[in-house]
Image (cartoon, rainbow, N blue to C red):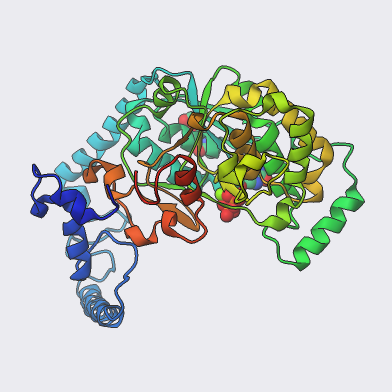
Length: 447
Ligand SMILES: Nc1nc2c(ncn2[C@@H]2O[C@H](COP(=O)(O)OP(=O)(O)OP(=O)(O)O)[C@@H](O)[C@H]2O)c(=O)[nH]1
Ligand SMILES: *[C@@H]1O[C@H](CO)[C@@H](O)[C@H](O)[C@H]1NC(C)=O
Ligand SMILES: [Mg+2]
């Protein structure tokens, strides 16, 4: 089926077109009355709308100022005024409102007390977030969405990792947000620093030319620690030993679709080991020698290369020429979203691969990201059917996002997508998804 929503709906005789929420949503937006969209996109409707809003604001302002003159305080808004103790008289007098607020607060406390963090989901799995204390607000934004869309029905635990101890404030807030248990892990210093075989001088040379060339995060030491940690160590953390599966969540990411099944169970039952939502090419300057290093490794350890692998996804050359005969096209799975099997990283192939890369120093002499490292490993060490594209997940990590195409979604009511289909990253010239479809023998745009 094609991405075209009209085809999809008119081909489902049981649902008349007038029932199609996507069509309604589009019509609403086109008429300018949408309160769903994030941005006004129609050219020509910006100025009129802005004038209307300004006019309304002005009228509102005049009314507020007039009212302030009338009641003697700005908080009046017609409900009453502040008394000498600073308390709002209207609210103080309205027993029913205070009762209601108190009852709401008590209900929230009862909920927190009763949930007991009992896990409902059946898998040995955790949501995992590597995060800094100062990113608390962004962490909560992402957590809230994962909880609302999925975890409130499953109560999977959350594991937070940090190179510094988490503050009490961070722990309090995230624990209140989580529907499952929470655990806070400190990263051992050895895993968040340059190994002794790395030369500080050579590292300095790199950061110098990278900052001159404006390579993103090119001059950052901690960004490199982070990439190396995500590549080689998070899955070894004490707090994750008890799990088989993880879902990586980054602060500030958005999730637009209800997930009405357990993705961990899905992965296990379908023998999937790694998954993604968005795929795109890495900046070549950050990984100049990653591919040649991988070629060396593959030559030394041909036994780790899966027979039916995804080389065709990570090269634009003829994949039948093998790893040695092809160049890397820089395509990678965007690792800020990952649902994967921890045992894949723990396995011999990946452990040896990481050690080999680590010794070569590219995490510091270049700026190898965990995304291309994870992706190249998954593409080469796993049969291609063990990598899953979560086409039914609506996801955003600035600056890219995607929403399920009409026929991936299966049920429009599942998603609240702020993107038009055309804005979805799948259709961007940089998206690597078309290579994914090709590798899996499907034509572009067809699910
Ligand atoms: N504890 C800790 N976490 C970090 C540090 N640097 C990055 N992270 C986390 O590592 C993940 C990736 O870092 P980001 O800064 O989001 O890097 P990115 O996704 O490549 O780029 P942007 O999101 O565009 O900044 C996020 O979950 C961050 O919170 C750090 O120094 N300490
Ligand atoms: C965290 O929660 C505890 C227990 O409820 C409370 O005593 C403490 O003041 C809170 N700390 C912060 C920084 O919010
Ligand atoms: Mg990020």
